[in-house]
Image (cartoon, rainbow over all chains, first blue to last red; front, side):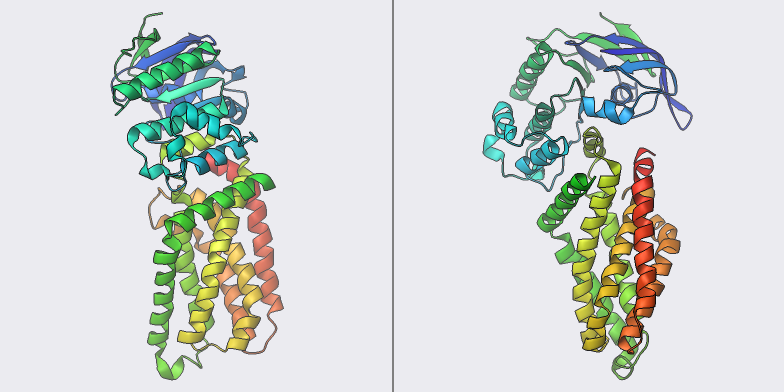
Length: 212
Length: 219
């Protein structure tokens, strides 16, 4: 569950978000679109407790963005960035083992997750040797291992082919069905045959359209 | 905290072992530095010069600066840092882990450079071996201070000269204490007075790092 009211984020006095109002329920998929610098990534970072709320009110997964424990909030969200979200010099398995141990999760689940994302045959390959699509799948494996309440996906479709996009759509659909809140940032509205997300459009740090 | 420290240290050392930056870049740089110091002193003075311990620590400091920067750079892109931040690792454990990994790398390099100082600066082997405990503690303190200042100076993404400029007040007492105890070992003096100073500095930097690393990460 996500709730923002008049949310403002300032970095060095410059407004990245200028008063965003938003409510997202569990088991929902929202796509945030907009031009470069519109505030898409800033909104995702705010929802993940990765930047501070300068003014306004916000609650994510039951944690107040102003007064709550942001470290605890970060444990409850999963982040997938378009530039890679893992250690390039570690293998696929080593990256997932690191995440599992950090979260005190059993490492036996790694094989299952690798099967799910189709990376079983690349388990011993270092992350930097993976293709762009495979790197994105590794990022998803990291998130599947964690099973966060809120998924924040920053331009996950960038440089993916049709198969990759279809795989992402299928997986996101499963995650939403399981009750997670998924927020995806993208330059353009989602063109999906299987998903029907709510689409927010940002411009200048403000929500300028909401098709809810 | 200890579990996180071992996890982070293991990860950092595994990355170093795989990337071989320490083996093929940092170590040759350090050995070349010592060789140049030996050549600068000249064959007549090298064996008798009181400058050898100071030159050893000067080269170690330059090597340490490279390693500290590297230790922060391996944390990767903004996406990796963001993703790891969502694991909610204990910052005190992360600091201890990065310090431990850095210390192991500095100890390994220190052993090679001590051998190099025997070869190129003609320090006495017996005195060099006696200096070993103080070198271990001094390099441990350098690793703790380096992890702290590495995070303070922008995690490998700040200006290249910021780390050496800012960390000088923290490193200077370590270099002085290390050089004094190495000199004492070479000249049959007591190394313990200076060794204790390095030990106190190690404990102090570890304590400060455990308390402040989380704040530095957040900023």
